[in-house]
Amino acid sequence: MRELVDGLWHPGEFHRTTDGRATRIRRRPVPSAGACYPVQTHLIDATGARWTVDQEEGVFRRRDLAADGAYGWPAPAADGGVARVVFAVLPGRSFGRYRHRAWPLWIADAAYAVAAVLFLLGVQAGPVEVGPSTRLRSLLGVPRAADVDAWIRRGLAPEIPLAAIEIPHDPVPDAAARRALGRRRSPATAEFAARISGAAAPEVEHVARASGQAWVRGATDVRSWSVPITAPSTVVGAALWSAHLAAARLCYEAALAGDRGTRPVSGFSSTGDRWILHALAFLDSPGGAR
Image 1: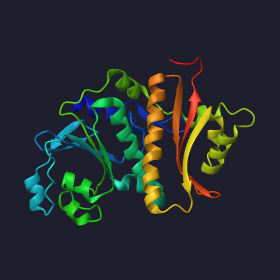
Image 2: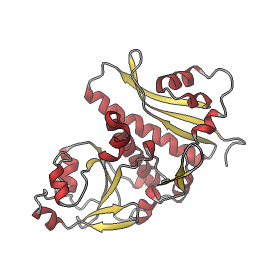
Image 3: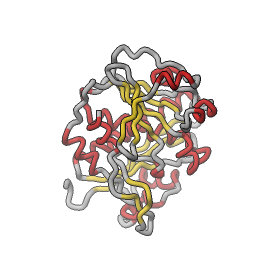
Image 4: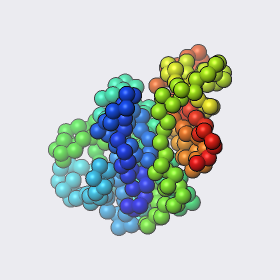
């Protein structure tokens, strides 16, 4: 389990501001919108024990389910002896930065984490369940995030479980995938901006305008995912998951190939008859694969 968790969240160098100053936030193999890192990792082992992972300290803590129950928390649902990694989000982390635009980014960050598990484990990974849902809350045995008092009584901030993946009892990440994910870094916006020369390709220009982010014009290529602006909420929810899972897969495959960098693009407003949910900007590496 530790190899898998380290492959996802092992801290690297510090993020830097646009003027080059180091922040207090470390980079992680799995990207996060605005470096908010709301995704939290929970593990269910072969014995049915529930573990929380302190991603800052690299510590695994076994939950005291009896103590949780004494504070009114629900008992976890039966797991059938299946090991799982469950991703939840601390909604306040993204909300503090993005406010009303935060909720799609909770799914975005969780999807990039799910895709990273699939990338690291390949055929070892089992079925994926996505939410939010009562089913995922029951797997962990946690109250609704809206029941803030229940969380505070345990000295915790509310979490929203968003995804679960069946994994082997002793997962072994692929060595090449782990190295690729570990060295993956999104090129800085300044690197894209430095490549702007002449008119951008039509799709690149469209994504730049729709996102309001001029640096996108320096991209070698872009991929985007959208829905009609009239799409019902169920369609939007499913599309958010499929878009970000697909983008994350491309992001990690590019890291493995080593011939181009990728930077996720979010924060779109609906324009015309469609709403772009997510995009991925590619930047070819000078000299090709590293």
